[in-house]
Length: 156
Image (tube, rainbow, N blue to C red):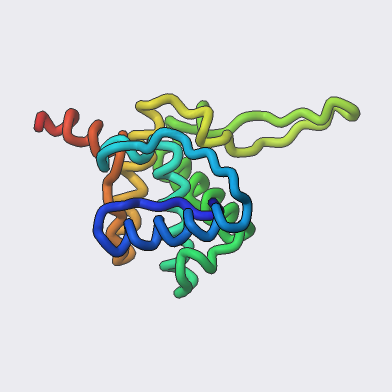
């Protein structure tokens, strides 16, 4: 399957089934992983960060999410990290690291991968990103692990 499906309606179920039938006709052998059940279990915080950066990039470029290129997404993630560290300089220590060329010993500063951030660090970035996007007129929907942590944080 080349795309992910969220099955939450009769039309989305129909689209999924058509895709499976097409794949089966072509390959005659398919293996599916166990599905994720329920909205809260659909995305971890890092996946949501990438989804939101894609949505934000599409919004800023006035294109659809599917039109966001890898280069545009990487650019959006970098600018988000840059703007975050500018407004939260105390987070520089975990947001930026030193990259060392093993052949020359040359060093440069670069942003860390979001996959390396701790749960609380990611929560802080996502909370900030959601507010930043809202200020620009884009509503980023809380989903998955982040939505669950927000509810816990708010005592719900």
